[in-house]
Length: 146
Image 1: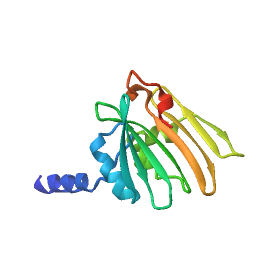
Image 2 (image 1 turned 60 degrees about the horizontal axis):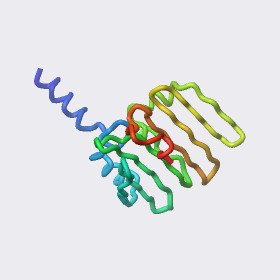
Image 3 (image 1 turned 90 degrees about the vertical axis):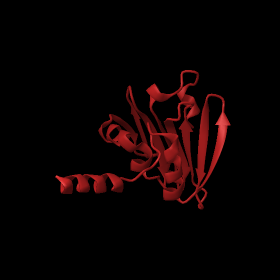
Image 4 (image 1 turned 60 degrees about the vertical axis):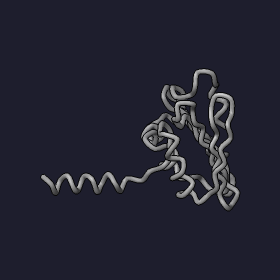
């Protein structure tokens, strides 16, 4: 019994911590380390914007509600970000979502009741956003996630 408990504790300790949709603002620091960037927090009306700028000029924005929950993320840069890192538990919604894809511009859009994702780009120029409509503060519209 003790060995099972020890294994479970080791596995729980090895789970990566990062800020992702639906997660707590305290995890944004892990993103800064994983992405190797510098963070700047900007207080906006009704939310806080955490901007992570990488050395190559790529930018990841994390939108945090007054309750301290990441309700949206956006990115732009030379490379696609690690979506597992940014989407967290919503990665399943991304993988299983109904996609509208325009191959020419490599655009992907997924729109569901509890998850919205859009991304487009080509070599060395990617941008996109994802948000959870139910987590967007009542006084805001989803368009703030840019």
